[in-house]
Image (cartoon, rainbow, N blue to C red; front, side, top):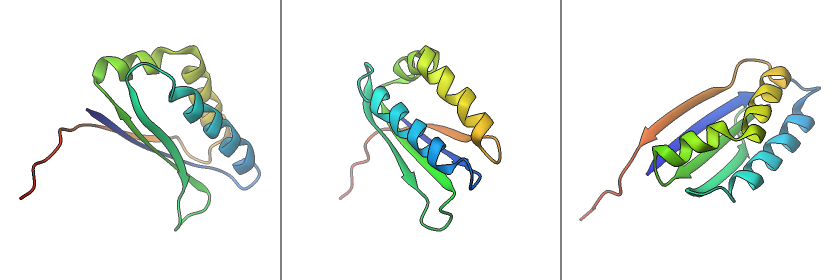
Length: 99
């Protein structure tokens, strides 16, 4: 499984539009092949920061997601609306056995 953690800091005057676009992006992304989950949250410590948490079946599914025209458009718009460039971290994970 691939886990993606991302965030973007909005400006006060762009927060609502960036939140709207982010919600559209995650809702659309959930229907893509290989998407296990895709969500956006408002950071409780910094209400101008939107935080993305995604789970994908594998690297190929994530690579395909990054090539979807709507995903490319979202990133372009997010860069324009953000107060700083988006941050993204990608992790390869496997379930841990505890106990």
